[in-house]
Each structure stands twice: as structure tokens, then as C-alpha cells.
Length: 409
Image (spheres, one colour):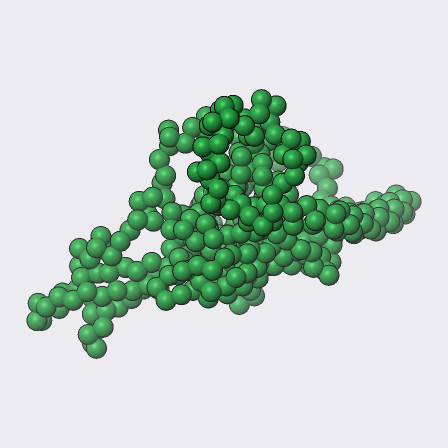
């Protein structure tokens, strides 16, 4: 059973193939309202029906399958209408088809408009990256325009002596250290994915940017300096949409693909080492057995969940819902990086963007009042697990290991 999803946002539903119809939903009619007699009959039969279903779970599955096969079929109401009325309904359908074509054109033009202005945004992003990484300095005009009204960002303290001392203390600092890590930690959905172990690697993150694909979709690009954790200089994640638009002309998210991270030996942040002491029943000898198990990490973001295939167990509703929830969360994370983090990175770095979040609470700004729930989990060490004993051994003397399920947070 998969672990519960952290930071799940059920009110934000991503447009996935599982929840977005490509065609109009079937029309059902309730023209004939039930009378008093039929309501009483339903009340009397409800308990009996429930008892039958409890005793026959296969009957429930059969009925569910039957109902699923009826989706999209006519209820018979339209066919029962007079010919003149059916003719008018057909005419309205034709008008709706024209409307759907215009919706599709609208979405495509919106995408082209986004790409057009993205081309204008790109030089600003490049200038931002140059300043963040110490390759250039902002002009006096830019500093003056971006300074706060009371001058706190530009000349905090006021005295020339203090400014000179600050300048001497920071003259060796290039750019804005840990800019992207700080911005991501202020962004609500991303903050809960970042563990203490991740921060050491994310300090080497120098730029986050995106690009549009030739077909509907986009690619997120994370650039790193050389570090002790992995050899990748650039790690990308690409979001693909289906070719066919959904109901209302919206693009339907299909799936995502992430780059494989080339971890250095012993530095994989997506796993942890568990050490357990095992005792042989016959010889009473003990030994330490280590195994690698998946763990929470921001870098799991680059190993996105996959939609259930036709071969998967469709009867396992909990498993299907879990996959759909993970797909929606993964899509929402990508959208937050694309639509929030990248365009307004400086506002997330300073924390100003938090004031515009719908779920924002000013009390959340006082971080000292809260404990980090991840701290205990991330600080799990081998010494902590060594005290656990297991007598399970197979015939070859090797311990039995259960495959751990990787958690996408």
C-alpha cells in the first residue's frame, strides 16, 4: 500500500486523461420526478439491497462494470421527444460543435500568445540569472527602481561607516547565495518536498527556467554547479499533453518524463540505508545487514508517477485513486514552478509572494513557532536501525527483504 501523499491539494484538480472527458458528457434526464409512493418503496428496499450487496461483493463489481459500460449511452429521453423537438436539439448540437471549434482555436491562440511573450520574458530571466550568479551587477537605475520605499533593501542602517563595514564583509560574496533554494522553500507546494538532506544539494542550484515544446507541453530546466551529489549539470522534466483537446478546449495533461540523475556513489538522496542486526537461531551469532530503501526527497520530482495501464488491477479502487492523486499532485507541482516560481522568483526569495497565496496565513511567517515534522525522519541513521533485530533468514543464510515502495511526495 502506498504511503499517503503529503501536501495533497484535493481542491486543485489537474486535467488528466482520467478526469477530463474529450467529448461532451452524456445528458441525463430527470423529467419524471418520483412520487410519494416510489419514495416510500425506495426507503423500504434500501436496507434489503444493502444487505444483499454486503453478502455478494462480486455482484457489486458486476453492477459497477455494467454501469461503466452504460456511460455515454442514451437514456432514451431524447428519442422519446416529438420529431420537431428532436430537430431543434440537433440544431443546438450543431451550434455547440461550432462553439467547441472556436474554443479549440482560442486555446491554441492563447498558447501562441504565451509563447510570444515568453520570448520577451527570456532576456529578463537571463539578466536575473547573471545577477544571481555574480556574473554582472544591477545598474543604479535598476537598484533605485527596485528599492523599497523606506530604503531598507538598499541602505539598511543608514550610516556610511556601517555601509562600508558591510561592503568589506561581503566583498567576497558573488551574486545572491542560495537564491533558488530560498525561493523554493518559501513556495508552499515545493517547501514540503525539500528535506534537510536535499538542501545541501539544492544550494548548488544556479537557475530554474522553462521552455515550450513544439507541440503542446513544456520542459522545466534545473541547472547546477559541480557538486558532491551527482554529475548532472542540468536536470530536466518534461510535461506532455494529449493531441486531442478536452471538453471546453483545454489541453489535457498526458504524462511527464524526468532525466535520470547520475548520483555519485553513496550520495543518492532518494534512498537511505537501513542497518538491522540479525541473529541466527541455530548458532546465536549476530550480523549487521544493510539494505537500501526509498525515502522522501525533492529529487523524486524527476521520477514522476505513471498512469495506470490496462494490465493493472482495475478493481483496486484505492490503488487507482492513489495513482490519480499522485498524477494530479505531480502536474500541480510542475504548474506551480512554471506559473509561479519562475516568473516571480525574487518575490518568493523575499517572501512577498506569500501574501498573494490563497491559503496564506500571516501566522505562518513566524517559523520559530513550528517544528519541522521531516526532521526526525530525515535524520534517521544507521545506528538507530541497528538495534532492531530480525530472525528471518532464508535457506542460504541471506535475510529476506521486502521491496519498499517509493513515495512520490
